Image (cartoon, rainbow, N blue to C red; front, side):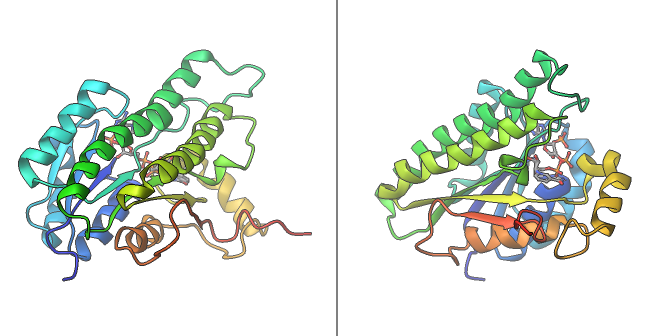
Length: 259
Ligand code: NDP
């Protein structure tokens, strides 16, 4: 396999979209490091599934919003796998309660920004330093950082302003890191999923069923973690060259303006 020996880190890789991404990457030959908040026992079935394709893959329990956890995560990747070629900033949360921005609470804003924006931003900073060192030793290798944002980076939902702002921030973070890291051969991309069938959207299933039925999307179905995984895989493998800083929509046409 062409990507055998390369290592990808997917935060939040043990379920939902992250697992969809991890499985596609493992299938392409990458060794995976996945992380999440839960203890290893709870994610063992997901890790076993990944290891069917990529035996040496590891799981690290680490809260992406916590600086010391992020440092421990990268240390574990370095000690166990020795290198890092691809970072996928996927871990993220929705607000605990969807609240109108006229009432929404500051605690929710702080939690969303810490997890969805500050965590990936500073994880990228640390990974960038490591990738720059790797680039100096081995400049031919394609390295990439891929941020999973959301259609919410541009589509305003007034019952989850904190989420939208965190994802709009990720859009700018993608641009900033694309500019800063290009000279080191590191491509930075943003993938914007639409309505994807995962635990995160389980509570709003009927609402979106009705919207999809009414014609919200051009491709009339829920998106799947595998759909997002395919897009990320393309970028991770370097199959979209000369395109750093790009945004890839995986939203079934949700954000295409129509009259
Ligand atoms: P899920 O709720 O199914 O999974 C979220 C993942 O993120 C879990 O693996 C979880 O780990 C991990 N995670 C959450 N908080 C932390 C944290 N503080 N530290 C480490 N890991 C954490 O969500 P999805 O798979 O649906 O979402 C994945 C990403 O895709 C998110 O960034 C989300 O915003 C984005 N997205 C989702 C869409 C959708 O329709 N589902 C649409 C657009 C974007 P654990 O399991 O251990 O809790």
